[in-house]
Image 1: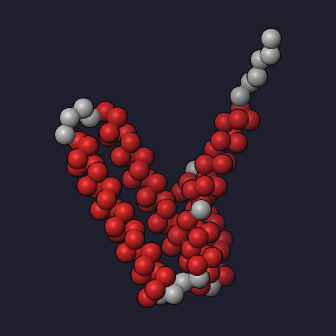
Image 2: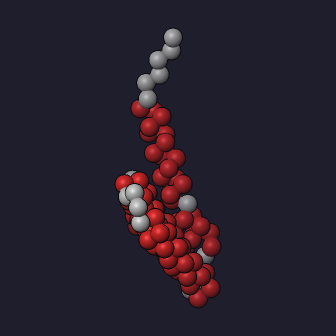
Image 3: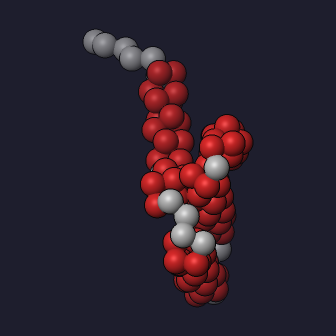
Length: 111
């Protein structure tokens, strides 16, 4: 759902120029981080010993790379911050859409 939302909106807004490219960059960064966070959670749940240290190192490495990417986009390429932030919030929109579809699918029984 996240990939569909991020890719669809990025393609739709790519024609708007630099703002659309900033949106696409933010959506790509947050989608990759969200994917790796989901993989981290799956591995951490199933591994009993020794995996936590390695997973934490990967987490901090990814956090550092994300910081470098955001620094490069903001300082060197001077992308519009509003487009970048809008792209970074696609994961929030995905979570809200996922929750709304789950809530709509629930059947409520009252006593």
